[in-house]
Each structure stands twice: as structure tokens, then as C-alpha cells.
Image 1 (cartoon, rainbow, N blue to C red):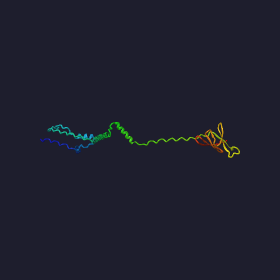
Image 2: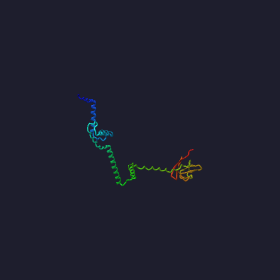
Image 3: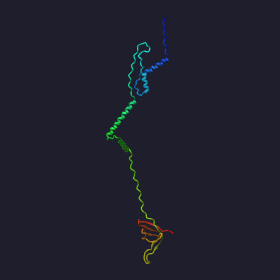
Image 4: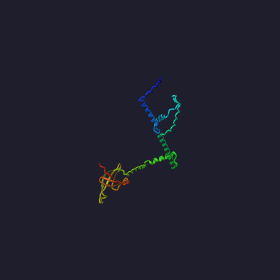
Length: 228
């Protein structure tokens, strides 16, 4: 009696075979990529590390048909590369520290200005040096001089005029004009040269006016005759 022939293995469908090939190709491509991309996101780096880490070996075959398989050696952890951002931050910090040290050396060399108050004084001086130098305001204009003193108005009125004949009928010469000056309580008859109240001197007498000089200020003033 012939032994039973084992059934042939089931055929793999073409679609499933293509999918397996694609997965295998992606796995090989991921394994060949280097770890030199410094700007990858942390999640992508973690996923890539998990994909490259082999599964822990059990030390024995699962089918029980052969000797135990030695466990694969765990790869040594790779040093983590610093990102470009970290290097830039460290470089900026070192540059800032160097500049601060240089500034302190300059301050100490210029006279030992190390106190906070000295820096405040320098800052105030710098502001004054850069502020606009405006000229001082012009002095106020001098007050105008007071007006010169003026003679007061003549306190009386000219109310009449006549001509007085020369002394004696036989005396030669023209008649002398006379002006009648009236005040509140007195009346005066004046000719040229007479002085009234010690201040008003008669200079001339015309037909309708009298010319006076106010002696304290030597100012002339004309008084017209009052018309009825």
C-alpha cells in the first residue's frame, strides 16, 4: 500500500505577493538610511530607532526541531547627535559671555568704573552729549522809555484883546497888544513878557490867540480866544 502523498502547499495570490515585496523593500530602505539627519522630529527618530532594534532572542527555536539558536548581539547605542539649534544656542551663549567679559575689561581699564552708580552717571552723560544744544532764549525786550513830561493844559481862558496906546500922546511907537485872561476868581490883562502864576510867560499876543511858554519844561502852548 502506497503512503499518502502530502497535499501541495497553497498557492500565494499575486496581490499578496506584491504587497509582501513592497513591505520588504521599505524595510530594507529604512535599514540603509543613516542617522545623520539632525532636523528630524523626535517622534520620527524614535520610530526609526524602534524599527532598527531587533526583537529579543529567545535562545531556542519555536518548532523544537533543532538546536537552540544563539541570541543576536544587541547593537551598542549610538551617540545622540546634537541638533543645529542646540549648537547655535551654545555658540550664542559663548559669544555673549565673551562680549560681557571684554566690556568689563574695558570699564576697568578706563578707570575702574565698576559700580552701578558709575554706569548710571555715564548713561546720563551720554544722553546730555547727544541732546540738542539749543541756544539760550533771547533776553526780554527792554521796556519802552516813559514819554517825556508834558506841560499841563493852560488853566485859564483868553476872553478878549485890545491894543494899549503908547505912554503919552507925544510918545512915539506902536500901540501894545494886550490879552484879557479870565479865571474862576480873577481876570488878568497881560502883554508880551508878563508871567502868570510864576509858570506861564506871555510870548506874543495876536488878534485871536496868546502864545505862552510853560517855564518848568520850556514848552510852548497856544491858547485861542474863547468865542461868545
